[in-house]
Structures are given as C-alpha cells and as structure tokens.
Image (cartoon, rainbow, N blue to C red; front, side, top):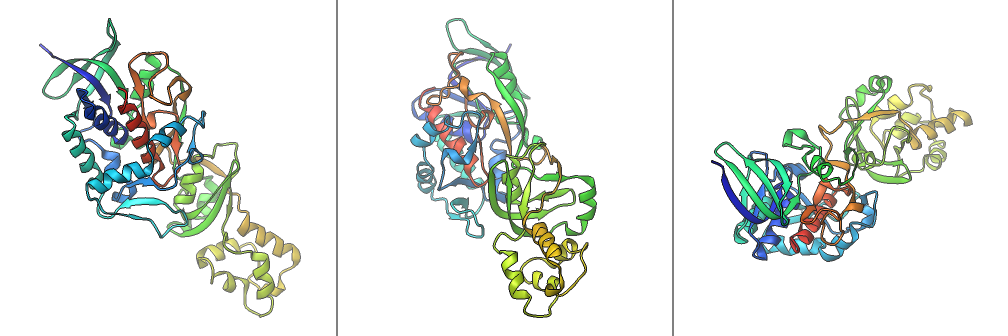
Length: 401
C-alpha cells in the first residue's frame, strides 16, 4: 500500500527558486516538502557561471528582464533585493567577487565554487526543517475537496499519496534538457486552465546561414569585443565565432531579443571611429590591413578585406572607403536559427504573469497554487539576473504559502 503523508507546502522543483521558497516556508513553521525528478538537486546552480555561480547582480531593475507584463517583477525586487541575498551569503562566510574582466559590471561570482551556494541553501533548508526528495516523480495532481491538493509521488523505493494545502511550481523551463528540464510546469498550468505564453530559447548562441558558416569557418574560436543591436536593444560585450555562427556574452544577450524577422547589426569596432582613424592612417604608406590588425584580430581583418585590394590606406577610393567602414561598423549577418534549448541558459515565455499575483505568486483562479522562478514569463539578462529573480520570487512566495 502507498504511504499517505500530509504537508502544508509541497514545492515541485529543487532549483534556486524552489529551495529559497522552501527555506522561507520552513522558517514560518510550515511542514514543507521539496521534490525533484533529477537524481541531484540544484544542478543548474552547480553548472552556472562556469562552476563559480554568478549568483546575483548588484544593479537589478525591471529593465533587465523580458516579460509580456514588464511591471510584474517590480514588487518582488522591491521586497527582496540582491543585498538581502548577500546577507545570506555573508552569514555562511562564502567568499565572492565582482567580475571585473568585462564591460558589464555588478556581476557577483563565488570565489571558489558553485557548490558553496547550493550547500548554503541545503543548510538553510535543514535548519528550517524542510524535507527534500530527489529522483522523485510527481503525477496525478488534483484538487482536494475542502481545499488543497492531492498528488502521487514515486521513486525507486516507494509510492506516496501526498496531501498539501499549498502547491508551488518551481520546475523551471525547457533549457538544457540534459540537466532534467521539462515542460512539467506548463502542462500543469494548462491542466488548471492557466494561460501559458509561447516559449523559445534565450541567452543562446546564434546560427548563421550556411553560406556564411562556410566563409567564416576560419574564424571559429576567435573572440573580440563588439556592440550588437536588434529590436531597439544594444549590448556591448565579447563575441565568439563558432563553427555554426556566433556566440559569447554579447550574442547571448541579444539572442533573447532576436526573432526571425528582426535584423541583427554588429559593430566590430565599437571603441573606434574608423573614419577618423582612416584620416590619420592616410599620412603614411602602410597597408590598411596592417593598421587594422593593430586594433583587432588579423584573421578577421584579412577575411573582411578579401573583396578589396590590399592597398595602402590612402589609395582606396571614397566609395571603397565607405564600403569598408560600413562593413566593420555595420555588419548585418543573416541569422538562420539559434542553438536551441540544448545550450540555452533560459526559456523565454512561460506561465502568463497576468494570471499570477505579483505579491504572493498565487494563481488568481486556483486557490493554493503558486508559480515561481523560470516557469513564469519573466526572463533576465545574462549576468546573475535570473538567479536574483529565482531568489526574489521564491522568497516572496515563501512568506505566504
């Protein structure tokens, strides 16, 4: 016979948002259970930031997030800021640093390893009396007569029938399926007639069309600082050429704004005005490629000037000069697709926030049902913003469940 257990709060998803919510609910004396179908909890925390966990950003506002309801996240950030999370980090004596080798500022990383953050969350859960079960699958979720929910939990050793007053969905999105990502949260929302907006990969590398892939193959692995624009947004960071297209921080950022009908423009010399440099370079007899190679990778210079004769700067016609300057400052590569969910760091879209309370994260139409974190239609920029959304939404929900 299956075991029958009752909790005040059941949280589905043991990632950043789910664990933060559990900590806060447990502190309030709520009997709290966190379940996750993966064999280990917090996998995304462990792999984030190259193993150092970019756990927040000092400069967080609604402008750093994409959502069909752009004001939704404001309430959570007003109540739980990056500095609140830093108090928790300091409490556990976790050394951290601000990233300084980047144009973007305010990004905070663990000095040692991502596991420091996960261990901190585990310790807080333990202190708050939270029960955590990994490798556990949830099914047969239904409303209970008199309020709350019934659900079935199954793992290798048991089948449990659970009852709970509050059910929190912190199951994340579709990004990085090898880490256990699934559409569970979206399916559950649909089950209870809560609208879900179309999803797509975000913070992801871009594929260029096949003809460009071939011509740019020699640049694979090359990185340089650029300024990239799309749909009214501009990001200045590093760009990396790959065997299928382009990636790196600048491209990951702009990928959340790119869609098939929207052109992409890249300034390959964001820190220079080539027309002004050109006038200085005309004073000597050096080749244009020689001058350019002093301020950017030579491989790229040679490829970009391939269609032009390799001449001293002063010997190009005004028409050629204009074409060359435009090619470096206003490159508009044809993007065919993205790398997809396989490598995307986040999922754009998700549970419609117009159906969710921005204060409690409760579903407006289903008593006792809550959605937090990435499963919602709130997606941050690269640089610790998505973790801060997880902490803030989890903390706020944890005050009321």
